[in-house]
Length: 476
Image 1 (tube, rainbow, N blue to C red):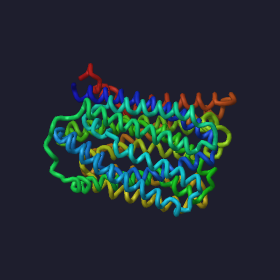
Image 2 (spheres, one colour; image 1 turned 180 degrees about the vertical axis):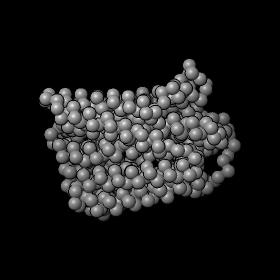
Image 3 (cartoon, rainbow, N blue to C red; image 1 turned 90 degrees about the vertical axis):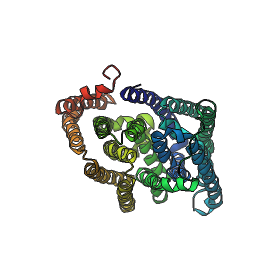
Image 4 (cartoon, rainbow, N blue to C red; image 1 turned 135 degrees about the vertical axis):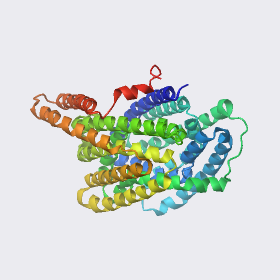
């Protein structure tokens, strides 16, 4: 199979899986937000954000390092899998024990303490998860099946078992159970169908593998700080109701930025393979950047216009206070798309050190701005801190990639932003002059915006459809 056809197949397969995950996740999010109420939903979101840091400690960057190493040297796959799973299971056991011992002394409410304990058990599933192996072998259909099954089972269980605010612990236990079961099943599939032949051992010992993964672990921690530390900080600075509003806004954001994650999974092993081929490496990086710039502007811009429709439709009037923060977070989504193009390339090309330095700066800025802005502006301040930090990260990474590899991706990304700004003027003018009530006006304005972005982007060369069509099998 040609490289282009494989990229296309993997993109389509993961897109289908992500589509199902987004749909089921949206149904689950809406149902839980309405049934649990803002306070209960805020506690659930607080626990998820907090335990995500423990998940990073379980993984320690080993999955990213393993993908890179197995993609370069497939015959070491079996040995690397053994090292990764053993290390992660030991770390998971230690961290779960620590949560149960320390949670009574953290100053949380009784509900928050119980939820964090339940969610910490999901670390077992995270430790067993084999996604990294199948990603390194570019077997994205396996990942797609696991994602779909986990999402559908989780949604079904939530709809059947959660009936009110008193079922908060059940709501926390369902995704934990679904993750553990799916991880065990995927591991069984690996042993039965994909278990590789005996292979050469990697040069690293178990401890050596962790040491080589450590920079990537730090990267994961820093990225997570940029993504959700604001939820943890808000958990201590605002009411549970306001926290619930912000968690709801971040769930909409998660749907808006699903494409960068999908394309990272597809392009990361391909970029790692092409590291020694300058021409192919540059071509893949530019294609990734163009796609992300175009879709980032279209999705985020339309999302901002649709905020008055999205909040009441999904969460109800009880979450009206989330609208301001959501608008800011959706503007931030544009820069998540743009930044992802650089982050994927730097990880694939072993440029961990400069990436780590810049993420450290961004994370420190994010934490500082959160403590500065949240007391003054509440959840809108948290959203603004995230936006400013992401813009700083985007510009810094663009400079690093240009200096290290001579890739001039920033100019095209700026053209994409300009196209979105130009398209926004008639879209908002239309919105202001449409007399229709209800959701009709924002929907029409959003459709006009997306159409204008597509036309302007094509005319200005933001996205080259002829070049991107080279990924299709017929053109290859």
